[in-house]
Length: 382
Image (tube, rainbow, N blue to C red; front, side, top):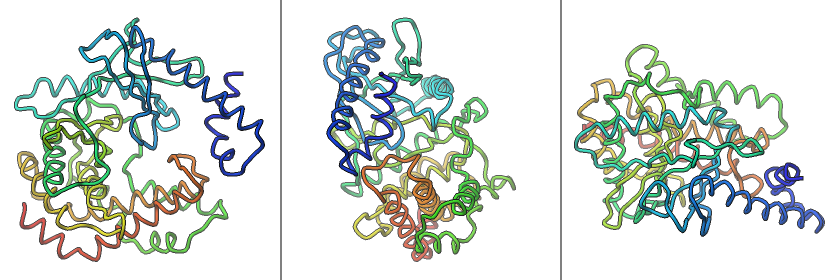
């Protein structure tokens, strides 16, 4: 019965809401939610002695994340910790994520002049860093960094400068960590040519279609530019965060960033994917789907102040291609997921991934239209 209800909760919920099925299904959905709540308390109890409350945390599109408050602390001074259910469809080997985080945390502890606090891995009472429930879900817990908040949009150019500094600082701290010490937890992640090949295969097997998206993808030039640069040794593989969008930076009350979270995607890769993704997230004017140059300037200047310690001349040469490529890549992924019936990214309504794709392609077009200005900006701040 629990397996059936879990199925209803995860796969039929959106159809219940969207198609107004009869009340028996609604009742089954509510029953499933109640069982889910009980399951959460049971799982959290493996990481803490007693549980006071569990509330959803953040708005991630992949994993399910919760803030747990316990009445007693087992491993940290704080009585709060973060509990996550890892999406096995995206991360089929959660143990590799944990291994990467342990390697990353150990490396950063050995560095000097560190200004970022990394979340600590918490173990169950039996010493497990990953816990598997009866349904095969993998769960893990991390320390909660109190007194901080994440942002969905930059409030000021000071916020932009802090974001650039934090990403550059992370890259500088990890520049001495050999990439081969980390597992590739997401093979193919941020490999744009692979996403493009998958898109073409999917597009031939679906009746869904959007002319704007299809035309933009067809006309985009050099989607393989970063991968080609890597293969030709113009760019070197380093440790990357993998998902440095704005809401993965934690701001303290004084406006300084003190942590970079959501580290599941830490892996070997090109830092240019991180830079492009950060700028895509932070400089996107959602009202107009345009690229904000002032925010981009603040981020790049602060980033390069830190990255100068390890950047090469060719690293600078590929900054604009990265800034242009990342909104295209994410738009491509959103559109492909829409064509496949929204299997990967969480949605709250029909057509959401299509709208996300259009927004990213419009942002990409804005970047291309401002190529001369962005390249001049890079020359000024390098």
